[in-house]
Length: 338
Image 1 (cartoon, rainbow, N blue to C red):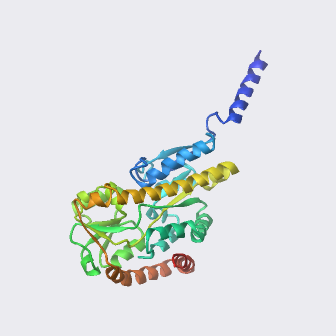
Image 2: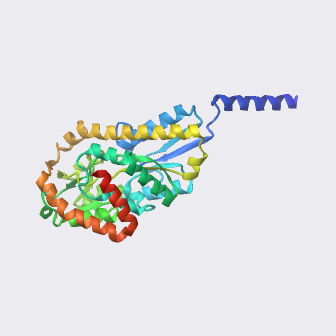
Image 3: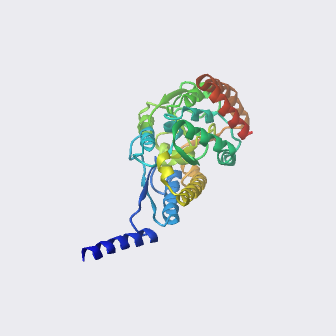
């Protein structure tokens, strides 16, 4: 009788394994910084699409559990959790990612891109593959791709409209902790102030910082229009999200599971880009911000004035800080943009 029962248990387990209806053997715990709402922000869209495609495409052999809004701590802390295997994946800001791969600052050459579609070509093309390979070599992290944090970064502040470097004088601008971001603000005439993301709204509200820089969708969902008066559409940098996975977990996936995870991530990145553009163009984006903010767009001549002072400063910093590695990656990046 005991033998029959044991055989039945083994048979049922084998049937579950064959049909894919057993409990998932593998779970991807995914960190991202924003709300888990696909219609609210780009990473929300990315996480939602990824989860759906992975779970359906693997027939449940790989499940995805999302941890939105920085639930697992600051971005750099969550990144360490991905590296150590406590969680399996994360969608990281360049500010957080610089803690394990400082060379990400090479991407901060101001006014490099003429339009947003060029960023897709660069990060989906040979340069993106080169960057991913270097990241994997230096960190052990597997790179799933480079997402859109919401588009180009623009300037907001509570003091005055910005048209020239002279207008930036005395304006304290919140930045991520990246030296390249600090160099950009300093070169453009402002005063950089490194403040963690969770503290930015309060810093702007209390005057600890006069302004900040972010894409329109982030400015909108963070409700910075409540504490900022002026929005300058400068488009001075593009800072992608870096989507990584623990290297050992990636290696543990079967070939078919890897294929699904790859196409799910690429589809999710496209969805995130689309959501960024939709928010920018909709009532929730620039139109909403303009109700409470004075908006101006830098002219080509004004951009050139900023570019003349900012680009040399950032190039100089990159070469001094990163040496030959920085020069190689910088040359490849600029060639890809060109």
